[in-house]
Image (cartoon, rainbow, N blue to C red):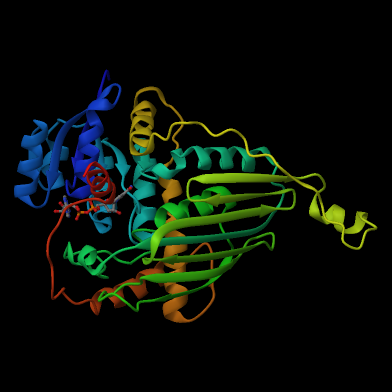
Length: 385
Ligand SMILES: NC(=O)c1ccc[n+]([C@@H]2O[C@H](COP(=O)([O-])OP(=O)(O)OC[C@H]3O[C@@H](n4cnc5c(N)ncnc54)[C@H](O)[C@@H]3O)[C@@H](O)[C@H]2O)c1
């Protein structure tokens, strides 16, 4: 294969964003688009000069695509991916890879059976701060995990939720902040600290007229006894991410896009017994490595996906790792609704039952004012004004 021909499934806000940078990719091209809303498929196909299809099956059967980038609402990620894998078509799925662990595990199994490349759009893994933190964790310089805490603050208006019939409903979206805004943070949490073995979670909705959670928080315990804390909301402005990972040899602190790393001269447990001084404390040296200048974001993940297809390059965000953030989200929702502690790995059928109950009680929206504008396209336009 000389060039990977990519079809984009779902050309709303994010799908159009992906179409717009395809021309910058090396050895890949936008080959087709599809959407289940025919007028938008036509408009976007004509804008980018590629064939357009109503629904993903016609596009997958057209023989025009080697890979599909799925940017539909989350519920459709697993079925479209499975249809693609059955046809030997590689998949790059938007986050989250699905709405429930059960559906997502099916998707991962289908990928394994097909031998196709499967990646997930966790573009924050490309950020210079995240890459540096990953190197520190993998080098062992942080030591044994002691605590992880993460605050994910976003702001979403009612107009945002009214912009799509699917948004913020159990039937259409399958979750709120945990399924839409927080997955990037949850992915970083699990990617850098690993998965907890149990958690106690709460969710609530206070300010918006939506079915799903606008706030979520959890306390967690890791296999080695380390603690985890998480808080995510769509009710705070300005948006911010604070993330601390503490080991017995050091501490990493993220504040939005900045990252600092302190390295201890003596591991905590050793120093506790070693010092004779009443107020002694291990010396901590700021040892933040120089951060790479560039953040390739979405393009970085898509180019890496293309390179994995063409030359077996190691994936930055393998699709199977998309299960981590989803499992955390499902577990917090389950814990909150069933008012109990949840053990991980999650019992997928238990969550499926809860989701079925929530979907059965889900009501069509009274107010929808359709808009297909993704967050970063809006921010870019605002900066130019
Ligand atoms: N990685 C990121 O930075 C990022 C940012 C925004 C959105 N997203 C993800 O992208 C996905 C889409 O979000 P959006 O904001 O673009 O939504 P959107 O509503 O703007 O667009 C979704 C599009 O999918 C179409 N669609 C619905 N069902 C379909 C189906 N079965 N087959 C084909 N097309 C279908 C809709 O008609 C619509 O045009 C979500 O999963 C979201 O989490 C990721």
